[in-house]
Amino acid sequence: MKLTVFIVCVCLLFVASHASLEKLRPFEKRCFSVETQQDDVGLCPLLLNRTGSIGCSQCVDSLSESLVIVSDSSQLNLFLSAPQVQNAPRMLSMDFSLFIVPDVIQSLQTNPTRVLAVYVTVDREFNASETNPAFSPESTFPNKPFSLTPDSDYAWNPPGTNIQTARLPFQVYFINATASAELRLLSTRFQESQEEELTRDSAVFPRQVVDSIGQTWACNQQTSNECLEASTCLPVGSHSVYSIVGQVDDRLELVSVSAAFDSNSLGRNFFAPGASAEQASVAVVLAVSEAFASYRAGAGAGRALRRQPMFVVYSAEAFGYGGSQRFIQNIQDFVCEQPLNITQGLIGCRIPYVPSLQFTKLKNMTWAADLDASQLGRLVDENGSDNVTAYLHMLNNTESDAFVRRVLLDSFEGVLQDAKITPLEGLPPSSSQSVVSLYDGSVPAALISDFDAQFRNPYYHSLFDVDISAAQYDAACVVAQGLTRALIRLTYADSESVPNVNCSRIPEIVDCMVRNFTGCGLTEQF
Picture: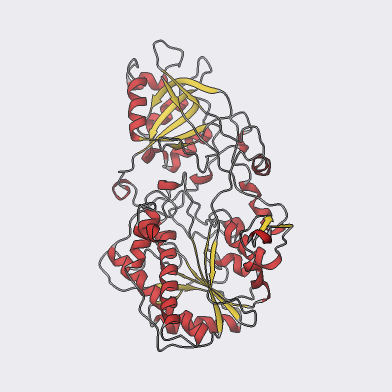
C-alpha cells in the first residue's frame, strides 16, 4: 500500500539585523533531510496534511519498507536489538502513549539503525489522566538559553521530558486513528507471529510495503533565511498584538498588561491548545481590558490619565521569547527602510513590513511597569479547596519594583502572595524575561501566575492541556478583578470606582481559542 503525505514545512523567521536575537539561531534549521548528519535533524514542529495528520516528511523521493507494530517498550527493545541481516531498516508503528515515554525516545536515539521511520497514532479521545498523570514535552526549564539565568539547573517544569527537541535520524509522522487503523490492517495481513515479526529481516516474503511520499517545501534550502526569501516556507507563529488606551502621550509613563498566546508541542494545532498555560492568561488580559474600557466610559470619564495603559499579547514566545523580544526591540530601534505609499492611505512600512508605525511613538515613553499574566488556569486546588491563590514573581531590586509590588498586593486583597523564590532562581519562564533583559532591569516586571516555585500545570505545552474546570474559571476571574483594580490605581490613582469584570467572558474566550475559533460567537461578532 501507499501512504501519501502532503505536507508543508514551517520555519522560524530569523532576522539577522537584530543582534540580540542571535540566540534564536538554533531554531533556524527546521527544514532538514534524512541524509544530513544526526545532529542536524529532529522532530518537525508543524507539518499538517489535508487529512489532519501531523508529522514530518522527508527530503528524498520516497521511503518504502514493511511495517512493524510495537505496543510496549519491551517489544521495541526486542526489535531494536535484533540482528539486521540485509541491512534494511523498517517502518515502526506505535501509539502516542508509548512514544512519549522518555525511555522510548532514548532507545530510539541510541539504537536507530533498524528504523526507517516511525508512525505515531494519536487518538483525540485519549484520556491523559488515566495513563499520564503528568506529561510535558518541554524541558524542565523551558526557554532556558534565552532566560536571565541560562546556566541554572532549576526545574520550573518538573514533568518536562525534553522530547520536544529529541534528535532522531529518521522521520516521525503523527497520524490520526483512522489512518493508522487502515495502515496497520493492510500491513499485517501476511505477517508472522508478533515475536517473529519483531526479529525477522524485512526481506522475508510475503510483506506489504509502506511507501511515504511528500517532500517538505524547503528541502532544497539549508536555512530559514533562504527558504523565506524563496517563499517556500513561512514564519513560525503570527503577529503580536497591542492596544494603547487613548492617544499616545509620551509625557506619560507606560503601564502594560501582557500575556503570551502561543503554545508549543510535538505538533501544534490540537496538539498544544494551551488552555491553562496560555489561553486562560489571554482571556484574563482581555477581560481586564473590557473592564477597563467600562471604567473609562463610566467613573473614569473626563478624568486625566496619570499613566498610559497598554494591553499586549505576544506570539512566538515559546521560541526564545521571539514575540516580546521583537516587540521591545522594534520600540527601541525600529528603522523603516521603505515606507508604504501614504498617498494610498497606507501608513505602515513595506520593508520590513509592519501595517502601522504607531508603535514607534512608544520609544520616548518611560515604561513604568509590565504586569505579565502567565499560566492562570490552575489557581485553586482541584481536591476540594476553594481558596484562590495567585503568586507574584518579581526581582524587587529597585524602589520602582517595590512600589509596583505594593500596589499589586493591595489591589488583590489577599489573593496574591509573593512567590518563594531566591535571586539565584530568578524569574520563571515568561515574557517578563524580555522586559528585564532588554531594559537592563530598569522596568518593574511583575509576573502573576498560578504557581509558586514550580509549574502547577502537569501538562504544560502538551496536547492534554485542553480543559479548565468551572472553579478554575471563577478563580481566573478573581485574578482579573485584582489586575483591573491594580491597573486603575496605577493609571488613574483611583481605587474606589473599579467596575466588576465580566466573568463569563473568560471561559468564552478560552473556548474560542481552544475548541471552536471559527464558529464561536466572539469570532462572528468581531
